[in-house]
Image (cartoon, rainbow, N blue to C red; front, side, top):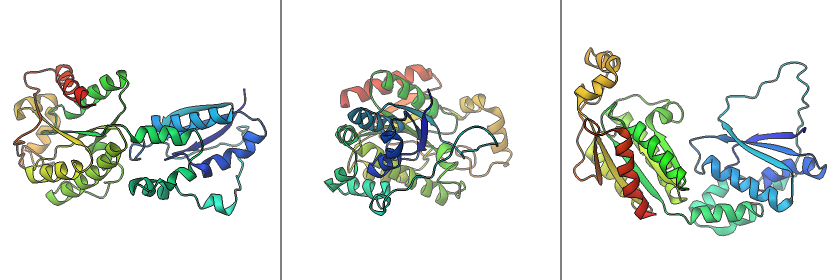
Length: 302
């Protein structure tokens, strides 16, 4: 079956997006709608997919909706057999902005519903009623923060609980490309992470954040900001430098030789959390067991 393909972030899916599909819908041509899995968006890819599916179901449109990795570009060679159509829409439709809709939602301005297609509006509204939780994993490099967060996400998703994962590696490869590893740049990176985590959690996700976040004052600031709207759970992923070095001897060797500057636990300090909700000692406990402890802590809060 041939389909007309549309690719976008759709964050959130609105009437302007639907308008660019209208011609193909009116012609009765099946659609293939691809949702870019952009980790930096307020709304997770699964939610955006459900919004589109709900609208297409309401309209009785033959549409297949799929999530794809974030793409760098769309490339065509000669003679591949696909026609590229420029979609023209009216000026009033062009003025609909996903950014403005997100701002309306942030400000609790319910007129955002006027810009969201039927079906998708209900999905988004239900999503925003969910409980927001931020789980903040802190610890030295190679303590096991990201590995445990991934396992927690898997276990929660299997239980039907929506999650979002954030970590420093992803952030620094995208919106924090301009930052280095000085104390000031670490602070800026955490400020950006906090802002995104806060938005995601306010809209119902369990947000799993893995950041070294070595300073107590910064973690206190993060807690205070997120607790304005959501539940904050600090998880200290505890590991000795000796054990962390075993997990990545090459990385630690470069840090000890001074090749890597400002390395937490070697050339920069790590301040242990004073009162974390959970302490996971990965010197003595497997990542799998640690993840179970986090899930057991989270579930009663949902």
